Length: 378
Image 1 (cartoon, rainbow, N blue to C red):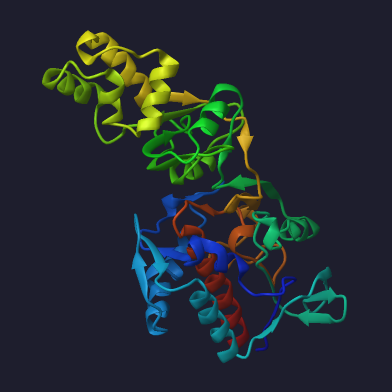
Image 2: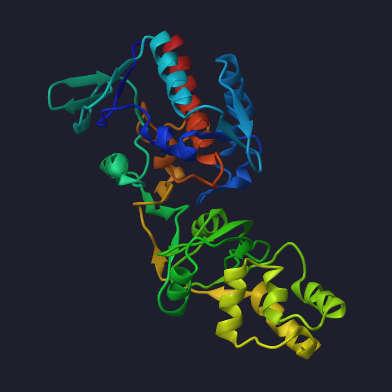
């Protein structure tokens, strides 16, 4: 079986190269179906079982690539993301796969024997065609919606794409606040409106004020669930109850200023901003239990309403994509077009932040490759 990879980019694996601060968060050892968003929440189960995070890690170890676990099961290269690219490229060379870069695709056509892929200089024919074009995220490295165009060409439904794992933007007071506090980070728990009676999306992780709005892992995570017009609830002190902590401080030393007491619980600039904006003045001894509780509740349930996101320019992935109803979950093959496969980010399966989207790329690719290999062998 002969295999060729066509890529319009000049370099292979640019998204891998820039990921994880240049060290590539290549998988997550906690990978499970509940870490993915899709119109069909069960679709990813088969592929993830067929090639798991442990399976990919075994290949990393066999190649002698040093790695470490950073946070919440996230695995990173010790050295550089290029190690992952080299692993994949070496695997292609060992399997005699042709890597053809800098080659734009002009058109794709169905034939009686399979498919024709036309470029500016050559026409490639194949019995099997795998679409691994990714989504629209980070256009500066060449990302486009080409995969969605192909899906539509072959009569497949495409779930409306949108930026995901992306910083959120604001207007008015919150925008001004973010600019004032740009660079301030805090541990926070961010929640979106419930998506069912039993499930409210919520993420407890880093939270960052920027010149453009709010960012950090907790915001990036919730951005995949947030929709226009919705408000978010932010707990700026999720580790413990602020009311209890402030009462304890009051009992120990009621003469300290409220702002000083609050700065012992939150970053100083953040405490100063809220004290100024809410007119929280005076010493702790002057604060009643009710007033302490009201202030604590505001900080535990700070509500903000984004006006949008930074878009595909900074989004790490694209939500939505090729409707999974059109695909075989065990093989990633289009049910109505034998030999045509869609894998990775172009499909309506989007992972959380933390290596899940790379694992979906590995797992879905393995499912398609195994199906093609078995068919060829038969």
